Amino acid sequence: MARKDRRPVWLLAAALLGTVAMISAQSQQPNLGYDDTPFQPDGKWRVHDVRRPAPQSVTPGLFVSAPPPKDAVILLGDGADLSGWQTDAGAPAPWPMAAGVLQTGKGIIRTKAEFSDIQLHVEFATPSTVVGSSQDRGNSGVFLSGVFEIQVLDSFENPTYADGQASAMYGQYPPLVNASRRPGEWQSYDIAFTAPRFNSAGELSSPAVVTAFHNGVLVHHARSFWGGTAHRRILPYKPDMARGPIRLQDHGNPVRYRNIWLRSLISDK
Ligand code: MG
Image (tube, rainbow, N blue to C red; front, side, top):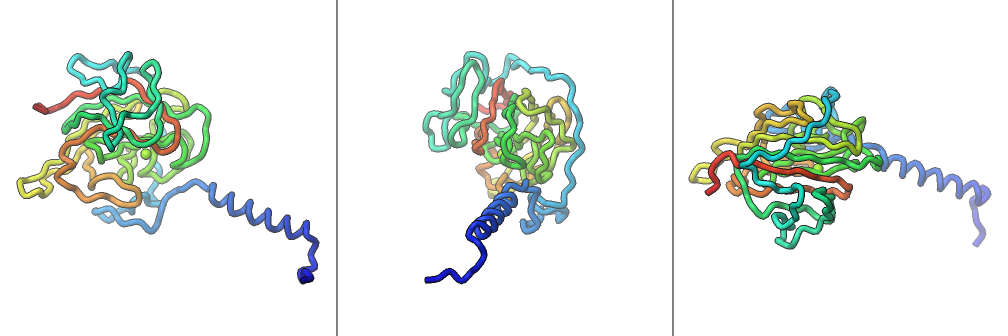
């Protein structure tokens, strides 16, 4: 059958390539948020609201590591192995570790032990070679009580939705300021976490509350979680959120962790 379109084949091919390039450029636009997600309970912002302003950037002071105090539970440290960690399914934690530095691998890992109110110290580094943008750049996360995520992301000159950037209470609150260091540099989170409480009927009596410092800079001051962390929504509170493991997220980006310790703030006997 004769070709009816009289344009030369090379012109058609060029047009097709142009369309493919346009679609691929669109798919590489950074995700700056959503306008179709549910509103948070106070009605101010949607989850991952595209209109929510990004916090100001603040250059933190020099990095200072925080060695564990004597009463700390050491989750990741010099000479420690991964015997205190496992997958959610209970298999050995499959992430590679060398010389006390752990790198994200396949699937989320969690501590075998569970906790409620804690002080937590975490050191992490996103890749020094920048790959991807927005939520695809150095993404991981630290989950408190198993379900409340403090976001880990390379947020150094990396626009994304405000409640999804580094140290955000993911999907709920942006940090007060963006205290991120450059890609590849070690950074720290210091977190005081009060687990939620439930009455004997299983109803929420007080929400999870977090105070957090990113590289020594206050980013959350006694803020309550609306509920558990999820993408594009908020999980309703459930009594089993009252205690849980520390979980580290695999988001497909290589992120390193070291020197993770916590202090239990109430007797867990
Ligand atoms: Mg994350």
